[in-house]
Each structure stands twice: as C-alpha cells, then as structure tokens.
Length: 351
Image (cartoon, rainbow, N blue to C red; front, side, top):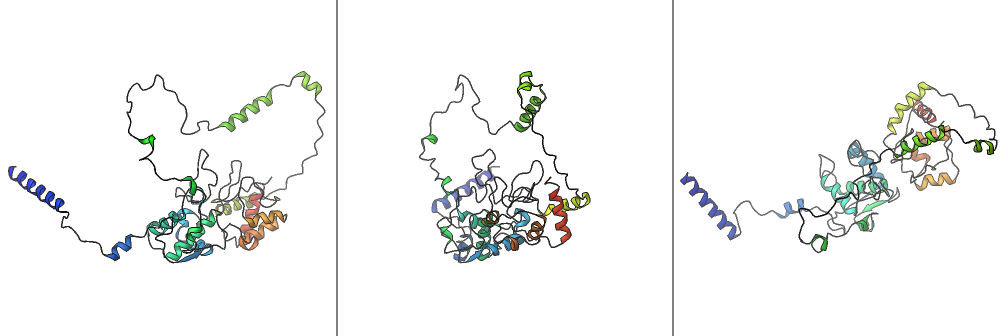
C-alpha cells in the first residue's frame, strides 16, 4: 500500500511539473490542413463562406433527394423531424412555430448548419454549390425570395431574415438583473399567488361555447317575443346535392395522401404549408382566409379563375405549368384516373 502511494505521489509531482512547464509532451500540433478541415464555420458577416452559387430550382431537386425524407418535400417536416418553413407571425402565440422564416436570426446559421451537419448521417458530403442551392430553396419555401433567385458568395450578406431584430447580445455580465445579491431561501413572502401559467389550460373553449349556444337554443321563447316577431321569410328550396360516387371518393382519399403533407380537409382542417381545401370546387382561386398565397395565385384571383373540375384537372396534371410561379413544388398526377378520383374526393368536402 505504501509503495502504491509513493508511485501515485511521484506521478502527481511529474504532472504538476509538466503543467508548470507548459507542456505535457502528449500529441503534436495540428497541421494547417487539419485546422482548415475544422475551421468551416460561417458568420453573419459572411466570413467563412466558400466560393459558390446555387438557385432555387437546383435546391429544390437536391432537397427532394437528400433532405425531404426527414423534412418533407416542402420543408414542412416529417413525423417529429424539424419543420423548416411556415410559422410566420406565430412567435407571440401560445404555440410558436420556430422555423427559418419565423425565428432564425441569420442566413449564415442556415448555411453553416447545412454545410457542417447535414444530411443526417452524411455530414459534410454536400458541395458548396449544393449548400448554396439548398439554402436558396429554403428561403423560397419561407416566402423570402422568388423562384428565380440565385444565392452566391457575393449576394449572401444582402439577405436578411425577418426575425434578425428579435435577438440581442448576451448582456448577463453587465445586467443588474443577474448581478449577485442576497438570495432569500425561506419565508420570503407572506403569501404566494399564481400570477401566470406556462400555457393556456382552457383547451376546449369552442366546445364550451357550442354547448352554451345549444342550451340557449332549447329555451322556450318569451310570449312577447313571439307576438312581436315578424313573419319569417319563406326560404327558397335548396338545390338537390349532386350524387357522388362513393367508390371513387374512396380511391380519391388514397390519392389525397400525396397532398396531406401540405393540405387538410374536414371539420378541423387548418392551413399548413398549403391552404385548407374544403369547398374548393367552384371556389375562386386564392381566397382561403389566413393563408399567404404566392403572387402567381393572387394574379389568378384577380383574373377571376374559379376551381372548376376542368381547371383543377389541368392544374393537378402539372401545377407549375398551369400556374407559373406557384410555390407548390408537387410535380403533379400523371394518371387521369387519379385526378378524377381526387376531384371527386374534394367534391365530397365541398357540399
């Protein structure tokens, strides 16, 4: 035991002496090439950017091949993988969506992360031109550039993300809030009250309101209200609904699975990467409330385009040909039977 302690003491003394001397005589200095391989970070002022360029169209193809398996064809996210687009204006809501367009401060963060860590499992396998192209596509997916945009080393720093001003330098060392002070650990307040909650707990306000309205509707009307009420106008008979093909609707529901990443239908449908598609048959283009349409679709709205069976069929065949400049990157449905079934399915949500 004494022998072991003596050896330990000598080893400690040698390490202490080496530390004092400034060298442990372990390893070697990194070569310039090794340092360069690690020194790949890109900063907001453009420092570290490699030479290169890439446009939205190129980025869309690369993204579909290398990134969409996790992030979706439209950067909408698959399963629990990160959503990269959308979320505009949600940062002040109870459920903020923190995407490149809504939250990230600098474009250099996007480029640096893709360049350094993506694709998952194949980090640093992308060439600089490919990273520029993917970054350009992600800007387009967040409605920050047009579809003909090209990103390069030269114009990189001219691109600003919407939430850049939402960040500020870490000032905790100077801030009086974080300076050392006496901290109370016991009996600090006479009483404790809840002044705020982490999230809204009333998760069913609409159901409650609906129940109240239903209850009010069942109450018997007062006699004076009945006496003074004017005769109700006679309503015109509603047109007979067009009979739909149930088998075709069922087939269309399967085809709609290709659309579900971006669109929803039904009673609880919400706008996602694309607008909800309830009542789209016979509806004028680009009229869904709360959705941010491309300039191309807004123009069609101004032209008075209506989504008839015929127009939908042509659009679904090749969206980009029918609406030049659309943000919708879906290639289209080549088979006529698929388009017919999908339109019938949409009709079932339009009556």
